[in-house]
Image (cartoon, rainbow, N blue to C red; front, side, top):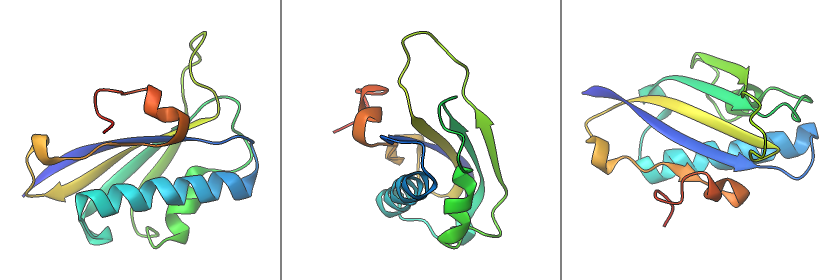
Amino acid sequence: MVVRGIRGAITVTRDEPGEIMDATRELLQKIQQENAFSIEDVASALFTVTADIRSIFPAAAARSIGWDKVPLMCFQEIEVEGSLEKCIRVLVHVNTDKSQREIKHIYLREARRLRQDLVT
């Protein structure tokens, strides 16, 4: 078994705690579903948010779906002119037997524009 990184991102329309929580839960659950791992397999998760998201930490959503023993950290994404707004990104480190090629990275809503090569 090795540690693999799984990337994902999702956007929100407003910086409101409920919307951030719902979107983050949706993203994490889709990542977990598409990559078929259990919470016990998660080594850690790193979240970034764009500067226009300040109302709540995305890690709170992860804890609310049972990731309460997983090491979680949140950071602010660097501000690049013209970049996607109101975006939550995550890098989940998972212990798995899957190859790099088998990992499914998940990009939802407007975040699909970030990695069109990975979106089906």
